[in-house]
Image: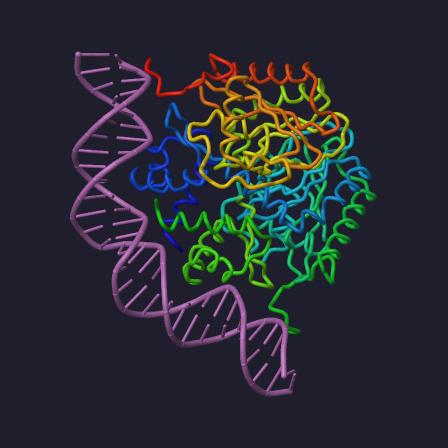
Length: 255
Length: 255
DNA sequence: AAGAGCATTCGATGATGTCGAATGAGTATC
DNA sequence: GATACTCATTCGACATCATCGAATGCTCTT
């Protein structure tokens, strides 16, 4: 792992955590000499990855990051395949629809279809949710090879699953049923139900799910079936041969 | 400028240009040894800045870029101040409204308010337009210190201004009037009108403008005045003391 | 008016990234 | 069905390059 590049990305992560950060704060947080940070930041500055406030001298993320993220979205085949089905799902179920991918123990929302009733329209594409606390995340963890990243399971609400053993048991159920649920484990008043998206290699590169108000929880069977149908259809478009994905306990003997 | 970091960002830029890129293609484009690129990419891979297709081995941008871009948007004070006024402007003028910032000779759209008639709803936040070919860009170039970056002015349509001298003359007008216009210089059938957003230091960190169908061009005076009013109001919220920004021919003697 | 905190610059050190060649897997070709 | 090719990947030695600590200039605060 290239040290300088690793540090550069770490600096971006620090800038991600706070609006305006001083050079010294970054240096302290990363346990580096201020001049070291300065050199890296100047390089990032030259490419627009970070910006500097002209008056205070403090740093924040730059417009180049927005461009990168936007291109990422448009090159994501998963997303383009999801859009149409998400619209249909939202109309059919009356719920907001989300699609997400895994990023190191967190779920990044790559598509958000607002609920038809228009309760809120905040652009939620790009937001990050701890994987263990949302339905999308449980699906992705269940489908991933590494499963849990051995990081502590941060508690978000009173109902967040923080016990690794209990989460692992839940993931087993997800693997068997192809559906994950979550009830106010990330946000009070919000529940979720999600299903895996499978690609040609049998991997689970993403998940599709509903955001359900707690007042409408548990969800009726029709909505659950709609999610299952949509996920299966998208997976087929992605080249998947089986859905839900095959459970792989051991390295398959048939390979 | 840190060499390794610079190369890492360059790699991201290459990945930005094509959906799926092989290691060799990146190495060729950047004139580097494949193993050098590989080392850097592996580091970026570890942070989710790039992703690798499991089957082909090719690379593309990763979900971490989306997260970065999203955080950038939410930490941008400019954007949060623009949202309300953009909505109002769109309703008042019937046009789509955009806000943008400058990124090395290009404009990055940081906010997009669709036109009320709902002609199209593509999420255009994050897209990039050559600064010399759009109204937002002309405003930003006029307000910037470096003016033109001595890069060739790429032609987008038959009406794109590609002559530096003519563009410079246009920028002078923009500085005097506080309004920039563009008629089918970037996209056939699309015209634009924009005004500068000024901050407390008198800089022009962003621009606000309308996207006008060619059929409605030239725009009536009322709409132009609405843009001017919105830009002035937002600038005041940002702490600006004067609008349009003062023209600085020379380093001010009063400093 | 003096002090602190900040970003920034500079130069010497050695740790670190770079390169070229070799490996292995996977695929297309004959 | 076997071969040749492309491609990502690994390894080790060299010298470049990033790193660090101290010093500077600046602005804002006390």
